[in-house]
Image (cartoon, rainbow, N blue to C red; front, side, top):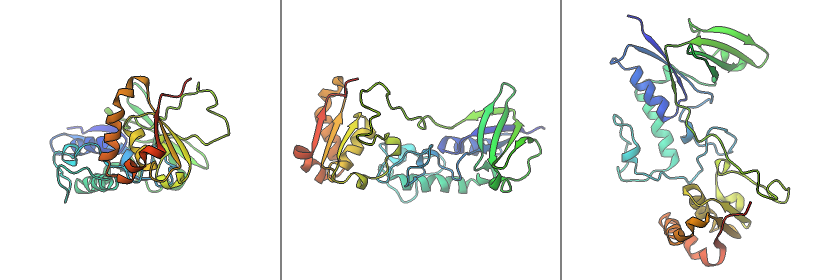
Length: 269
């Protein structure tokens, strides 16, 4: 019986779960996982330099749901209380351990970026020349082009599973007056990694959802001033925001709130 060839785009937690299922004896499938990075784990890979376009976790990030809720059904977190909120490094190590336990690396092509998928399930992907030798020869692949930097191949599959997540696109409004002035640096929370870079500086954090509140709580103890800008309809959540800051376990932060922390209406466009 013909084995169904499955293309999986992305080796984060969802992509690895798909690879685990399709590689099991329950299905007559042959999965291939395309990963553009040199690592697996998707968003949970910590990049201390903030240079990766696909990862956004920061050094002190902890999960906002217990690990017992977010774990794979067939692979519990090791040495962790199911009610615990674990750090991003713990999640990263957990995902790697999951891939190793189920021997998923044999299906993963690292440093391989999917460029297009057409209606015939033909996938076009690119591999850096210096990484091409690391990819074993594939009977179904066809060389499209090669230059001094990259080789591009095409390959047809029976089914496609897109598991590349939705947190890689940064959104920064372009219609805020003065946004692009050179007076001060502007960055998205996607590129934030640790608070030390903002010591003794005045920082405006725009947005009071999970990332905005969490980052503000990290900055408050060491920044000269932190201004958290939130939407008008969220002003009634003032106390809730303060409680969230206190629950982060940073007593110094709450002690500093009266002198270094402000909550203001959103920046007007």
